[in-house]
Image (cartoon, rainbow, N blue to C red; front, side):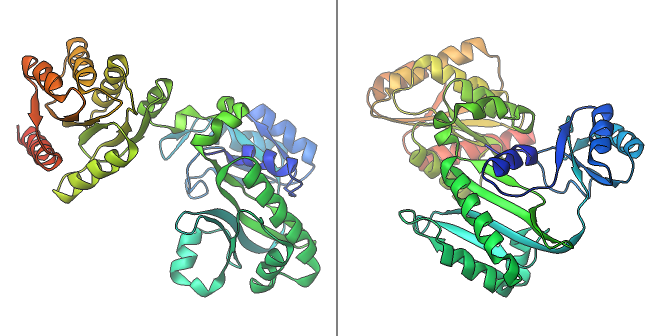
Length: 381
């Protein structure tokens, strides 16, 4: 789950990380009132879960409350990368002396948190890593020990933060790490972290991503989710407890088990095809859940073929077959299906599918080849 800038900054405030003064506005009139309260130039920042807001006209500096109202009326309602702008963060304008980058994320390979700092802020850290890797400082954090003072101090020295600001930087680093830990985040980022001309350190922008698998521990986040930034298929899948991620291909995949789902997508790509999604119906899936999964798959206009790959352990192959048959009785579709069943009650499942005149395959390799062929055939017709 990705948080908006204003949501991330609310968390920053709770964890004593300094941010510019400002509030959220939903109308041009609110933007004007906030600008009057701040008594000076303000920055209007579109709240959308997309990068490149500035280049798209979603960030504007204004010098008067009337200008804030006028510019807010232009930003609100526009779309940035296809996402509607419904709210603006109106903040005091900051005189910037230097922009830095500071953030942390999960290093899955080493099972640690990787904390990153750079003297080049305000741009994508990936670009800095590619063009000037020597400008990036990194430190690995042992999850049992957490981020230590000396590690934050070493980062400050490496990116050449003025010594008078080290104490403030260390406090920001430790507090951000605490927020990252407390909220089960997979990313916490301040970009840029600025040194103002008055000699302060401020989090000018903020970004956090929360692990979906940990949301049960943070029920308050459910109401904070911005569904307009998600594929509608992903929103629908969540209602049924299905793990679904939309991708760019044309072969819809329905699989039970995350590892088997990854293997299925891998072999589709290995054979020259492109998966349209990741969809794990999980163990013990009922026919009703299978029906819901297929409705979601078939609602994607990119899908030209559906590949179902089921290994029956807890999940029974005949239950899956019944779900497929039930779904196709409810939904009219011209999309061809290729189905591979193996395991518990696979023979009964094959019989059900044969009666429904659905194509089956004995191996995953054969299933992938058939799905790709059907997809290519659909393009030429």
